[in-house]
Length: 294
Image (cartoon, rainbow, N blue to C red; front, side):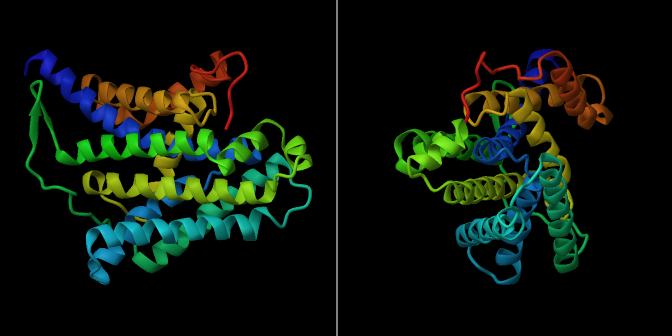
């Protein structure tokens, strides 16, 4: 196999995977910038998107588009309930207590999913067939194009919401100074509520669009959540372009490492990168002197 088509193949695969990491990382960044919480349960909403869509599609026999929409709504409702029942009641939360609560929430959601759907892996049908496309000598599945397109759409909607809507601007204000935002009449609790709703919906969308390629199961959210967290760290915990670049970079390095070195190192690469970033540039590769947060 020639080197150029081989590298192109790895690049397409890495960019599509990196787009998923970027979506998950944006969920981490949105909650962190609005609340100061690192939500380690974020990966479970990725899992819920996939398994709920499979349930509505295969068991309840809903059409695929309806199954996807209902799965995102249910996952969003679970994310909102998680915030209402575990985060909001705390009067004086500490960073350690927040981490413990989100990890506990992750274990709980994963355990309930295992009891309901079992330990089997499930697949979703591709959105537009299995006929591969040949681009620049590389074979690309149509689902990869769906991943690129939907990821771009979500990122554009995210940008529009935070910069051109009242609620989005209020969330940005909370990210800069929650006390000042509350003094000018912004309901900070409502902004926290919105941040959990948006991040849950984004995580569910990521789980749905990747399931036709990688399949889904009750435990897929653990590794995907950790890699999304790596993408957010690389991007400096920015809910902007930095996290998107972080996800794409992580996906590319993973794919190239697995293809050129060994697939056994695929998961290790993400954590090696995370450790290097934390040691060398803890503010993230793509952050400015003062990170723009939102």
